[in-house]
Length: 354
Picture (tube, rainbow, N blue to C red):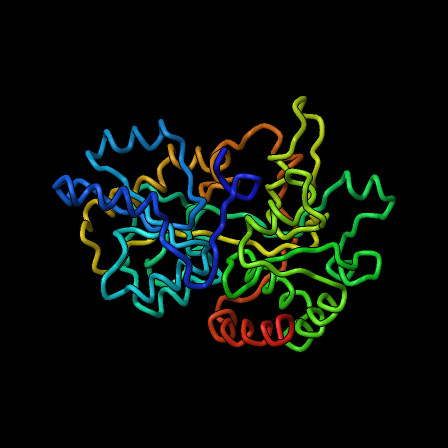
């Protein structure tokens, strides 16, 4: 598979990031062959957007559109690129802006309001702005644990955020940078929610003293540093998603190599929106309608390891056991995120990176 939040995710490379060579080649091919621009809709997304080939092919056949993708990186890089290019937008539709960056994208004026046909009522709880962004999926960003490593060493698995600062977990945790990674920012917000505006920096000082490692991308953290994904990394604790353990389930479906610490989570919501100044606004609306459709919503769990915003959608077998949501994720009010996001990222950078 080539998805995300399980070993499938290949998240971005930095604050500015590079556009995907494959995506650029595809778009260049469209220009070179003289394809009618109205028949092509360009989706700007994080580099781990995924949809089953048959589901996408059915949409393209029904709509008469060809979907091209441009992938600037992780959610943080994605928003930064949209702002930098808003006078000459990269595409028609954006998918992957999450609730930690949503108000920034709205405030910068990179989006056009649109109410898609077929949006499920259950998505309303995640609404932001005035129709600029439509909820598509959600999931919990949580610390993941390598069961085998802890079983073999005899060290008890941590449970809470406080546990991660204890000496027995020194040099065991890898997380992602909130300035470049949407999961990283979600985890920063989890600590703000847990310890308050007066306590979260002290918590991160303790994590730093306890040897936390910071990477710019989820893929580096999960594939390079984490011991539980492919068994090669040195660190048995990684920032990922509560759904990631569903990817490491044994062949008989009875167990999983990894687990999510459900007392460390922040709920992430991902959105789709029309880009202001899009070359193909009518095609863009059709693509947004497709992302809220039953066909796409039913594909989300298996393709992107997130929960569909349409909560009536049937979930894969085993998700109740191996991909549970946190019963009480930490929360930060959207207005507080808007007011303090940049300030918190700057303070985090000073505290953790120096």
